[in-house]
Amino acid sequence: MQSNRTIRIFDGATAIVTGGASGIGRALAAGLAKRGCEVVLADLQIELAEEVALEINSSGGKAKAVKIDVTDFPAMEQLVRETVQRSDRLDYIFNNAGIVIGGSASLYSIGDWNQVIDVNLRGVINGIQAAYKIMLAQGFGHIVNTASVAGLVHGPGNIAYTMTKHAVVALSESLRIEATQTGVRVGVICPGAVRTPILEGGGKYGKMLIDIPPEKVRRMWERVRPMSPDVFAEKVLNSVAKNKAIIIFPSWWKVLWWINRLSPSLARSLAQKRFQKMGKELGITQ
Image (cartoon, rainbow, N blue to C red):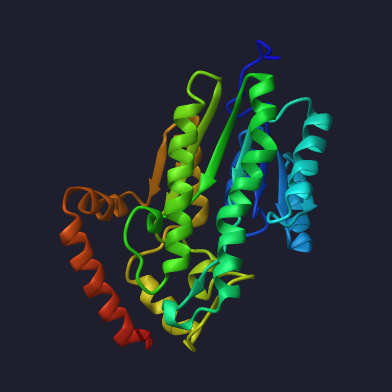
C-alpha cells in the first residue's frame, strides 16, 4: 500500500549508511547529518561508529550507531525494520560497506573469493532486499550502492574486487530501470581514488596477498591525487539529490570509463600496461 508521502532531500530524512564508521561511509554520514538527515551508522567497528555518532550529535546532528555484519541478512532486515519503526520512514540506504583483498588471482584461496563476494556483493544485495519492499510500500526511497571505478573498467591484480564492483554497477542500473515508475530511486557511486584506509591494504577487514609496505602503496596512490573523503561526500550527495544514476568522483576518472566504452581493445591494452608497471613496482606476479 503506497502513501502520498515523498522522499526528503535531505532535511528531515532518515538514512542508513553501512560501513559508516570510516572512510567514505563516515564522510557520507557526516554530510547527510549536516543536511538535516537522521543517520544510522551501521558497521562492525561499533566503537568507531559510536565515536562518529557522538561527533555528529555533539555538532547538532542526529545519529545512531549500530553494530552490523552486512553479510547477515536477518540482521540487516532487523536493522531496516527497527529504523522504520522508530522513524516511520526510510528515505535512504547507502549500501557502502566493502573490502579489498589485493593480489593476482593465482594467490587467492577460495576463502578470499568468498569473503570479497560476501561483503562487496552479498552485503549490497542484503541491504536492497531488506529495504526495497519497504520503500515500495511507502512509495518513496533512494537506494545508493557503492561500487567503484573498478566496476566500470578492467582490474587485473585485483580481480575479485573488480568482479564484485562490476556486479554492483549492473545490479544498480537494472534495479533503477525496474523501479522507475515506483517512486523508488536507485543510484551507484563509483569512486576513483579517495583518501580512505582501503587504499592502504584493503581496509580494516581486507588484506594484501603480497608483502608490500603501506608506505609504498601510499606513494603509488598519491600519484593520482586521492580526493578528500569529505569533499567526495559533498559532491556525491549533490549528485544523489539530483538522482544521478552513476556518480563518479574525482571526475577525471570518467576518462577511463569513456575509453573502455569507446574502444574496448585500447582499454585492454592500457590495462595490461598498467598491470605490468604495477607488477614491477609492487612485486605482483602472474
